[in-house]
Structure formats: structure tokens, C-alpha cells
Length: 339
Image 1 (cartoon, rainbow, N blue to C red):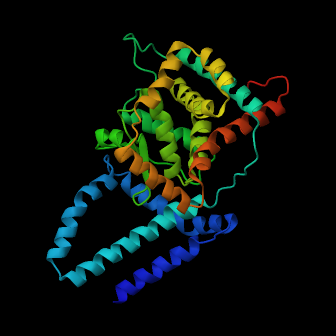
Image 2 (image 1 turned 90 degrees about the vertical axis):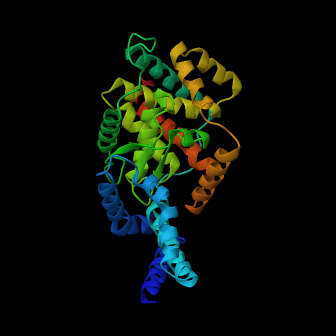
Image 3 (image 1 turned 135 degrees about the horizontal axis):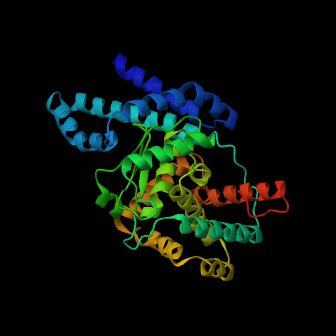
């Protein structure tokens, strides 16, 4: 009973710490509790080349069966509810609380400025594409690196960008790529194990951006829009043209749906054939309905629990990136196409 009382106290503490936390209070609590725990979990999980979260899911039925066989139904129920309380408390501490220290504002960006930003992104994507090896058999696809190369490049870029509370340690590939495809997932962040995981069967150009986005979560940025923004800033500043290409195209893919039809068609018309092909391949790998719909609804519920709206959480990224572009343009009035 004492153990279950301690679990209750811990759960209540996490709930009180999370509920209604202001940005400054959430930031202090993250520095004291969430960030150190996340670093510990990430350091431990990085010792293993496979996702511990997926192994734990595989092992959970056997563990539940073993726990049931070793005790009576009442004891089993207490154990399961205790474990569930701990997992939910850790989710509050490692995922919900960090999302509430977001420092972003809702300052609007006009369609004219978004269109100018999209044209800038298109120009940069075309320039980087010209630096990449050919994808027609004469070289390797633009972003199809080995897992180690991709993980090292992305984590180094994020560590150098200065936007993350902590440094990401490792990006892993899932053990179940086909399942993730059916669920419409290019990657995910497991808060309980501090892991950033990607689907290696996704289109090559999306892998660096997905890896950087999930690694930003691993490094303490839980807001979806801010994680994508950190990924964008890190990738476009990388010395690797494949990573820069992924940053420009990832931002362009997020920005295009926000433009009026006429302006969007004009921007797409100016893209090189390879960039257009890459952008079109993104939607082709994301199914709708069934499991993908269930995952989408679950993710929306998690975002609402963190205190954000589903659409605004993701759509925040292109606005943040556009504001960065506009601020740089104001700093150099004669050179609008800068970053």
C-alpha cells in the first residue's frame, strides 16, 4: 500500500505541476525535473541501436500475462493501474509540461509575405538540388544516407542551431516500417524512452527533416510547430547540401498549402522537375482512414492535452520560418532573399 500511495502522490504532483502552468513556471519546472529526466532516458536508450519503446510494446503482453499468473486478480489490477499511473505521469512530465514553455506568439503573416517566402524557398530548393548527386542511377538519391550518417548529421546540426534545451543523442529507425506506413507515420518521438524514431522507407528527401523534427522533440522541444522550425533552422545551416535541401523542401511543403491557388501554382511552376517529384511523393506515402485516422485522432488528443490546437500546432511552423525570413530581410533591406 505504501508503494501505491507513493505512486498516487507522484501522479498528483505531476498533474498539479502541469495543470495551468504559465510559460515561465513551466520553463522552471522543466529545468528542474523534465530536462534532467529526459537527458537520462535519452542517454540510456541511445546505448541500444534499436527502439526500446517498440521492444517494450512487444514484451508488454508477456509481462502482463506473467503478472497475472503471479497474483490474484485484485493484485494484478493494482499493478496494472499503478503502472498506468506512472506512465501517464511521465507523459505529463516529459511531454505535456515542456510543450507549455513555448515562447511563440500568434502574430499573423500576410498572404503576400507568405508568397514571397514560398518563392524564396523554391529558389533555394532549386539551387540545392543542382548540387546533389543525380538520382537517375548515376549517383545516390539526394538524402538516402546510412542510418548512422543521417543520425550524426541531424544531431550535429540541431546541437549547433542553439534552439534546443538539450542536445539530441541518436535517431533510430523503426523495427516496423510497414506498420508505420499503414498508420501514416514518417516517424515518432517516444517520450517514455527519450527516443527519436523514423521510418526508413519514407521518401528519401523527407528523412532528414523527419529525423530532425523527432530529434528536436528528443531535445526538449515538444510543440510540433517549434520542433519543425528548429529542424528547418538546423538543416538549412548544415554544411551538407542534402540536409539543406531537406530543410528548404520541408519548409516549402508546409508553406504551399497556405497560399492562394494562383500563387501556389506559380511557385510550383518554377520548381525543377526533381523538386516537384519529391514534393508530390510526400503525400503518396501517407494513407488515410483506418489505422492512420486513429493515429491522427490520438495525436490530436495529445496536442490538446499539451494545451494547443491540432491545426495551429503544425501550421505554426511556416509562420515562424516566414518571420525569420522577414526579420533577416529587414536587417539587409537590399537583399530580401537571405536566411
